[in-house]
View (cartoon, rainbow, N blue to C red):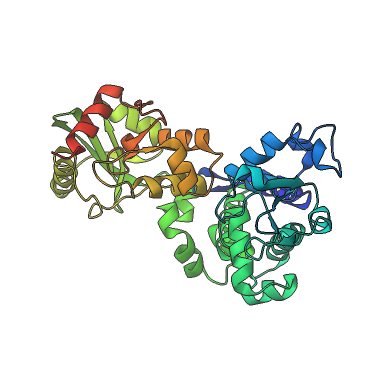
Length: 391
């Protein structure tokens, strides 16, 4: 079971696991704090001596503010007399003013004091707090409050929320909701009734489940149990200056926008949905979408019905922040969502976007300025960017 693997890894200090929500895998790609998984950053293994630390790799980790190295070494800044985590958000010192220490105690023995901003001595304590929160949420029948979790860990609620979200990518409350939703889905798949699944998962009422999951699921749990059967999607093809464009939408919003595709491709994306050719009311939405493609501007008035993993949705939200007429690199997006090492994963999330233009994945290019890929061909990507360029 996906959650069991996740919790086993969490107890080992490895935050890597998956929750299945809304018929997609809701994955948490977390850093690994096991020094054995970072082979090569220290020469000849763990050592008490700075001379045995690979200073070039350590400096690169500092330059990237790579949190996966937190707890592996600390960075001493000789000019200020402080030492920090590799991921410290403070301004980077000059390389010649830096020394690396395997442990905080060694930095203090050299006369340095701990940074009050990143609190480098609290790494192990933070990890323990995150694991304690995971265990508490998992074991509780009702999700514990942030205040209760703070009392368990000895952290203030505000600080606990910050470190948990930093490590897990979502708040304790969002994690608890994801856990309960996963339990509902597993119960449905094992044959339980919708009502039994909802209450057995820890929801106090069916309305609470719908409030937590209605936007993400886009369908009732009974439809979810049947693989999405009964969900209606209207669609239409329309000719544009970029070629044939397909627009598809549920009653909540646009769920697919693509080029040079038709019913066959839409059916492959939504195999158990009831696909219907759009009616007159749907044509009004198609007209809005077409106008936005032909004359790019603010797309926020067009409703969307999209869902993906937590990571994918974070990427898609960041794409929607890219101003008209500008581009960002995959590395820029990765850094903006707090995952600077996840450049390839950002590319994969781009490719998983079903709603072209309105979620503007075409505005992401390679770091060297070249186009990179695009699901509907580089010619369409180039023409979209040209349309959006300042006149």
